[in-house]
Length: 222
Image: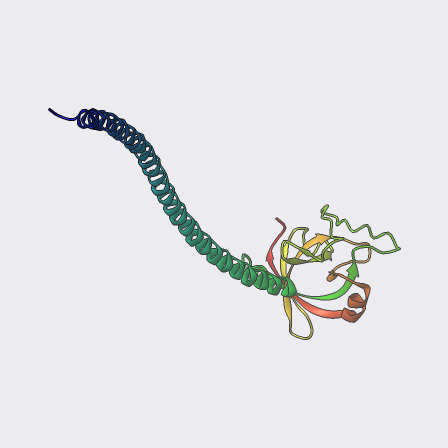
């Protein structure tokens, strides 16, 4: 006959094994649930990483395009600056030529005109404004208060019976220098073979004095 305590031990063992089995299954279920949650979180994070990577790639492409545009604009600006420099240089040369013509009273458009007649004349000089009634406005209506040139040529007062107003002439002074001038003014003291040359200052007029000059008429009147 079996002992009673052996049966008790067997029953207890079965209970322990059964309870332990239930506990092990629950633990595995919990672990699998946690793994599933982690997998879902991992998928979400991977999607975020993919989105960020795509955004970064897009931004890098935009930056590349902007860099290319900036490089192209820089090249264009350099080209424009070069052209501006060339134009400034050309303008500087043109200004020098204009000043040369003005200093000589010459104009490129009349330098090749033929001489119609040549006159020996007495020449004096005057200023645009003075205390004796000089207004700075010529008989032809030209305001010469700001410059002794008109269209790049010197201004002279004439006796219109000898040289008509608006005539174009070339004057050669006693020192051999010459300049182009237009007959734009008259004066009560100008009679016969005389001309009066507009100067910018009284000191220049005094320096010019009175002298005999050669006047070559290139165009009669307008």
